Image (tube, rainbow, N blue to C red):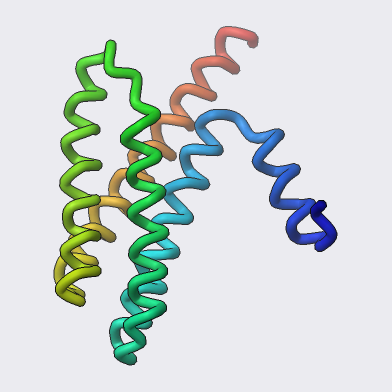
Length: 130
């Protein structure tokens, strides 16, 4: 049972969000966890480094599993997500900030791309309904 107002809000926002908003939430989470992992790495907090990079890996794995493979672009995205996940695994195992920074760059760029695509799609829908 959810008791905290924050948790109630979070659950409500997930349940009422569009697919594009949910996708952006996933990217926001992955980016936040990579940044937290990098901060933990700076202070040599191995446990929190592992925890946060692991959470980012789970999100990237989820992004990979939800791709619709009937579209050609999905294969390219899958390869990019797979490489990003590889970088996160490498960052976690080797405690490498360089690998994590590279993964963060891809996640940030992909998030921005999806945000722009969502705006374009929304504008197209509004023009159709217009």
